Length: 353
Image (tube, rainbow, N blue to C red; front, side):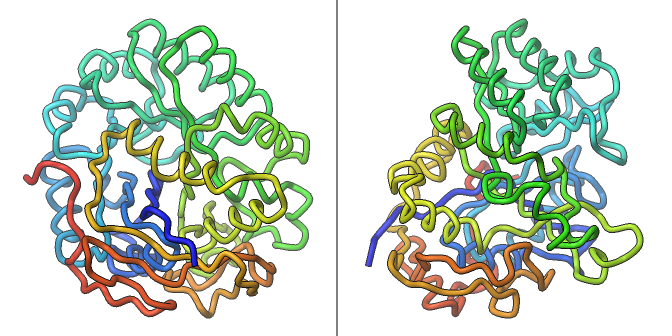
């Protein structure tokens, strides 16, 4: 049995408030513990979006009542909240900017709006933006102009990872994450998944894009799930929303890659513990670890999962490596799939409001 540090997932859509039929802080953090994640950072595109003190308090109130693992909540960058968001920075995971393939009130269409957030947000905390090809290039330019850290989410294309490599070589303060589904799935998997269930943003890319991610592994700072649950009914509807669940499948997929010789255990720990802790100023979790049966062979089945959405794009995959136990601050939080941590036992990693 391997004993590993509790994992950190820096990109999770908990869906609360506003869409608890998909997920909430209880089910989402239960899924996290089942997948070996003991700290998660929640995205702000909820209903309402988390953009000010009132909406941040609403999200954190739900987390305090229900979360079973540790957490922090991102703030969303809006068109008129640059100073407000900066004042709330100590209470948040970071600032999330939605710039391109995004719907709703958080989309920032003008670069002058980006600049306001770059001016006001504390330089000790990263600004997070999506990797969206040419938009990503503009974000990297902003990072260079303002000489401040930027973290790029769910990199999926060859051109993106190569541009990030070039920016790092020039000393630009840029870090990035890749989701496991972009490492293990491509557009060739769409027919098997179906049109609705394959909908995700960024879209599943070409095999050459996937291969470029593996070929540039040293450029990737974090593995992050972009856990974005929607129900089976929603995914099978005429207008399926984009997004995959991923909290419970990420580590088994990555451990299977270790057995295949594509990764090492140190690669996983660096990208799901060490680097996230450094990039997002996440404190150490005392007396916290997970125990993994590295040789366990098993089949991924949605019916065995804790996520409320009740499906996975990896249904039926044969994997090797399973989380058997999670201990959080000295207390057993999960044992062989049974969640033992109580709702509300998770703690915020940021200053309380």
